[in-house]
Image 1: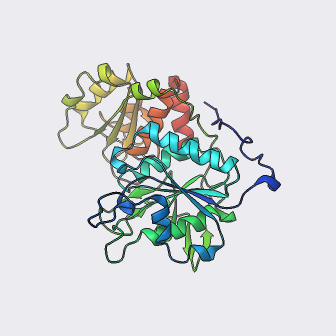
Image 2 (image 1 turned 45 degrees about the horizontal axis):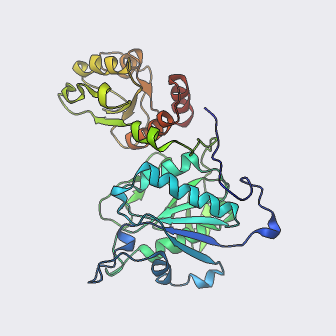
Image 3 (image 1 turned 30 degrees about the vertical axis):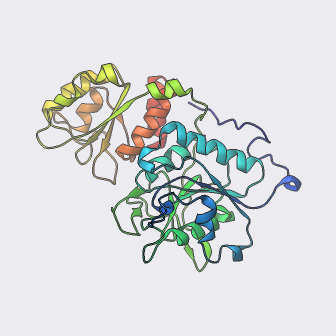
Length: 347
């Protein structure tokens, strides 16, 4: 399914006249640890306050315009709010910004970045970042992450890479990045691919180029988006899937995080096959890295058996990102064939 994001106002992506461009970065501030002052004030820091704390930012010679959007913890963000942020970011680029930085909480950063990447229509970088330590804590990492993200947002080397997560002076593709630690300032990694690049001595060094796809549409009806509920089931030892009973009446899709290369207990296989007759069921791995297989094992509950029962191969996509992609496709009214094709090309 091929469609593009249409941005209200301004020139279409890639057609802003050079003489009308206002160089600089737009920083969109959401909530999260980076905005929690950690003192008696209680209120979250604004985008202007976050940028004011970044040493050496003025020395970059880049104008940074801070705007406050959806100041909530990332765990409370919705698909609709993330798409709103992308629309604001896309409009900023069409109006002349060199790139956009988004600051938010880290709890859902890997999911929001992937959602943004699926619909981002520009070559200009969209750099998402945050912090693991509150601003008042010793060794607060937010200012350094923002400085690195602004560097990436204006770097020629980062153009065309889509949405990026910039953390701990590393640049990660939204498609691959995972939050792998609950407290470390090096919490983000890309287990299957490694970082795309690094910020070294103030220079953005991109080592890899991520594969890019035609953006999906962000113009999704909000009611359809709310109705496109996708469940996530993590398979565990001796799992018979009893909690999946009646799922087809409450949800429109299911992502299964299977063992290893995409296996489930034999007792669960038939239940998943029945669900696959009524909704798209995507098979992924719960391991956090690597791909599910397609035809190596053939026992009941194996990847071959599950594909024969109608499950869709999720490839390298982890369960959380597979859920993001499936929900966006369902909200756009994608047919089963379109969904299979999307996972075949993007997984």
